[in-house]
Amino acid sequence: MPEEFVGGCTFNFGPTTERKPNMVESNDIGSDDKIDSLIANALNQLSLDERETVYYEMHGVDEIVQETPDLVETSLNRLEFELERIKHTHRKAIAYRMAEEMSPDYVHDQTLRMKFLRSEKFDIQKTSERFIRYFDCKLLFFGKEKLCKDITLQDLDKDDLKSLKAGYMQILPIRDRAGRPVFIALPQRQTFKTPMNKYRSLFYLCETMLDDVETQRRGITFVVYNVGNFVKEKYDSNAMEHTITIQKSLPFKPCSLHYCFNDSGFRFVINIAMHFFGEDFRSRVKLHFGTHLECSYSLMTFGCPVHSLPVSIDGDLKRKAHLEFIRMRYQQEMRLGLPRIVVPTLNDVLFGRGKPYRQHVANIKLHAMMEAELKHEQASSLKGKRLLTIEKLMDGIRNGGGRFLQQDDVGCWVEVDEKAVQEKVGRAFRTHVRSASSGLKQLQKV
Image (cartoon, rainbow, N blue to C red):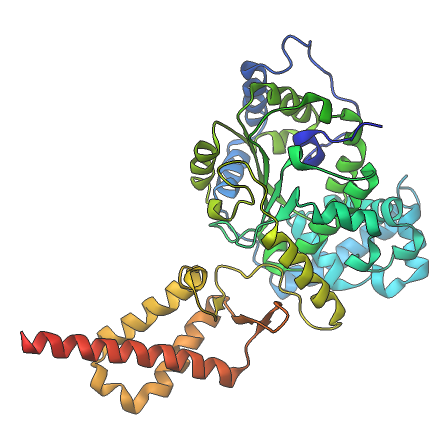
């Protein structure tokens, strides 16, 4: 049986109907004009405000919904009312009712429901629809026994794990410029025993990203990377049904989808995918045609951390970071009750050594704050109030939504305790003071 995968279609986001797409003639199916026309028509269907929203979200400059206590409470109450109204009439609500009978606490958990509210920007009707479909999707892929629990690595069988570790689907270790995680699919590298192994792996990875509240609020950037020889036989449109089910069920907000390719034959796949997309998501699709370097530079303009792409300039797949991520997730899932930090945010200060730490956004910000403190005060006058200055620096990071993180002995990101933070920030600040004093003495000798 041939492998089932539809390039970008396996990562479809935004379909609004259950109908089959109207396919165009074979001599037109991969044309540039056809794809451009679909994107242009999608934009024309949106209002000016909607187009601005799409543009801002794609470039990571959109506004996040302010979650006031009143909004949260009202939305949760309205969602409960709507779910009660539709649970006996919705054609996919059997699994929801089953889950509600098995574990009311899980189904009514506010943390779970907030994920879905954020994914739909607190639109109650859309949220209730997605919530109902979530349990139906879970029942389909994992069965009744996994219906009322978060899916972990232990819920994947041997073939699922083999598919997951193959690395053709990865979460990049660094967020994009807007603070969103980046999910990348490399369809030419796919390997699995059955399509269901792939779907369960995809479900697990997508749900993993949603452990983080920042991700729930900001959304996700998706990249389909197909730079290399295009093998049409590896793409089967029969894979569409289950992947659309995942997209319409999990509570993630796709902000953009980037197709990177260097073989015009891949436009055949993109065109099929475009016919399954809803109007809103068609307008979020960006095509990047060219070599690895050309596609990387193009992705950079959208804030993607291209230096973390799991593919070399020669086309070799990189799995080291991905396998480390899987190992970290296993350790996190074994520690019940502890927060799971999937990918540190741009506001988090990371303690560690080496270039990746020095170049992290929040680390650069912290050092800039130290420089500012030194400019306002002479280094010699800081001794008596150094502790106050350190606390001021720590508050500056935390007021910006940041945390102080480091990797523990098994590679999991954990928050550093208050005393250790004071010591580490204090040590870094003293280094700045000594550097400033040394520089001043050098100037005085001139």
